[in-house]
Length: 349
Image (cartoon, rainbow, N blue to C red; front, side, top):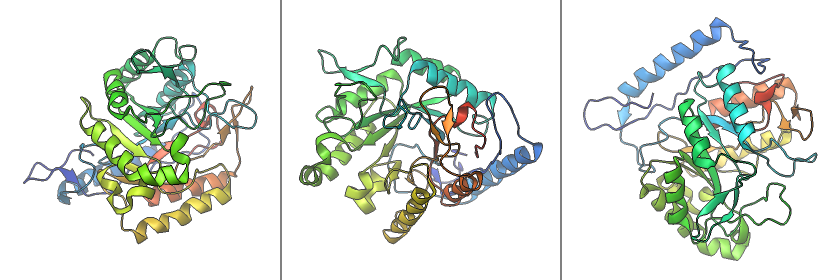
């Protein structure tokens, strides 16, 4: 679907079609998918390919050739490392388990080919100022884990913050995880050297100060985007706060941008995310090939839980199916968070 017509000077499809596939009662290790859904998916892929060839034109967006369709995958956020779900948790075992489950249950074949680490992986900087991973959580090292995921057919994403610190220490008391402020070029090059495919740029640390944030917000987002484009590797760029500072310029500096508060696993939060979608239409920055607005994570299946329980659903099955439908028809990125991949009663994908 990312291949445009070879006719003329066209480089990107304008079609915003993405295959819709929904399976209910999907469980770890069980491919509970009927042939009817596979036929729907095949027809959607064919139709999208035809539209991509027929309706091709130039799109003025973030110029890295990525994000021709909305990204789809799983993120470690809301896997939860404590009973109150106050911080993310991730480690090498969890990532490999999630990837294995996504292959077994059909998600990867349906297009969910990203596995991303949120605010849980980094530890500090070495004597040269290079970001380091938490070696207790990732004993094989980040490059080795990324190579493994690539060998399994997945793409890989990492989180950082534009401020001096990230949002969370991931349950590691007393640890101040460094953000990328002052190291935009260095961190982007580090990610590129590891083989990262996707960067999520958050807005935490000192930049949360209103005055400081407004002073640096637009410039920081542009500088980070320029560092990504100048790197040795094409990497998809998601900005959490870029829309608030760049507004109608955001598509020039992001492949994907958040435009609302965090989405939580409750129906009221889902409604708030939908209401925020109207703001995108007002500023005429709806999604197109190369840049996609984003209503934050899909919570279908529920948050993860600390302890032996795999997930803690905060909504009903009908809520989850409605949520998935809304995310689909608004053409946003599809990211599942939490531990639903590990045995949720309802996962729509």
